[in-house]
Length: 88
Image (spheres, rainbow, N blue to C red):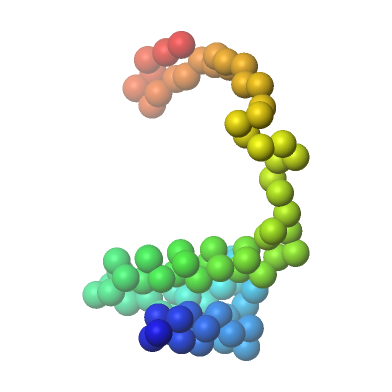
């Protein structure tokens, strides 16, 4: 599929850095154009997030137990919006 070939092309380590902040800078330098901003945003987000799949932690479980087996307790906190109105 063409999309997979394009993703493989851009994800090549010789083309884009594996450091997410450097990769973002490269994407802005190489791919960004105001006329194509919407498609750039979609593609650059994919290419930046794709770096996480190359991490050794990518397949590691986040939680030891499945969430359906966890005991959750309510947590109340005070919220203040930009308007200065306090909410509880």
